Image (cartoon, rainbow, N blue to C red; front, side, top):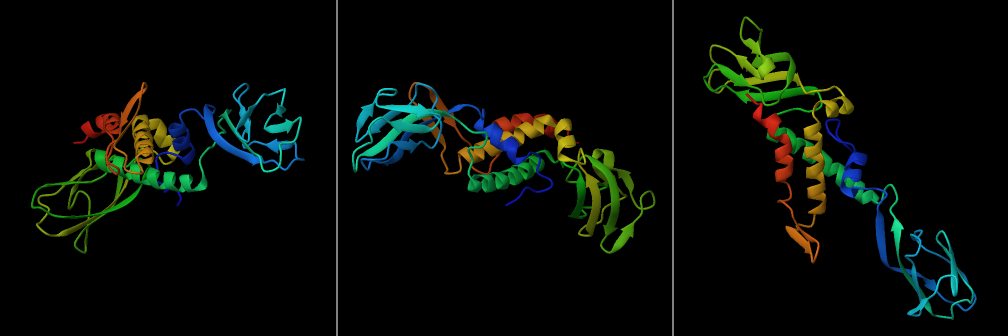
Length: 266
C-alpha cells in the first residue's frame, strides 16, 4: 500500500503520533539470549539496556553484573561460560529506536491514513489537498446546485446531460460558497461538474492552512490502529481505562477538531 496524493499526513507523522515519544523507553520482559555450551562466554542482547535495568538469568538463576558477567552496550561477557544446555534469558528496559514499527505496520498505517483522510473530508464536506474533482448529480428542480467539496478555486466545466453549459449564459457561478445557480436544474437530468477544490497545492501547504484537520486525521489513525482487533475498552488497575470508538467511525475527539470546518459549511 502507498499513500494517496490526497493523504493529509505522512507515514512518519502517524508513526510519531502513535508512538508519542520515539525516544521513550520500552520494556523487554523476557528475551531468550542463548544456550550455554560450556565454552562460549560472549552473548549479545537484542537491544542495549538502560543502565541498571538488566536482569540476567542462567538456567533460572539470577546473575550479578560485574561479578558473574560484564555488560558493554548490548554485549554480555561471562567470567565463566554457562554450562552445557543451560538457557540464558534476560529482562531489561531499553530506549526505543526512532522507528519501532514493522513493514506490515507501515502498510496498515498507510491504508488507515488514506481512509482517515477521506472520512474527515466526507464529514466536513471539504477537500483538503487541492485537486480536480469530477462530480455527478441529478437535477431536483430547484435553482441551487450544491457542490460536494469546498473550498472551490475554479470551475472547469458544467455539462447538462450531453450539453456543455456556459457560465453567465446558462448558470451563475457561486463557487466561492460551493454552489451554482440556474433558473432550475431540471429533474433527473444528469449534471457533470469538473472543478478544482482544496486548500493548498501540496501536503505541507495544506497542513499549515488546516491544522485542526491534520490533528483529526492523526487522532483517527491512532484510534483505528489501536482498535484494529475490535477492542472497545481496556483498563489497567491503578492507572485508568481507555475507550475506543467503532472501527471505521470518526472518534469524538476527531469530530471536535473538525467542528469549525463543518460549521462553516453553507
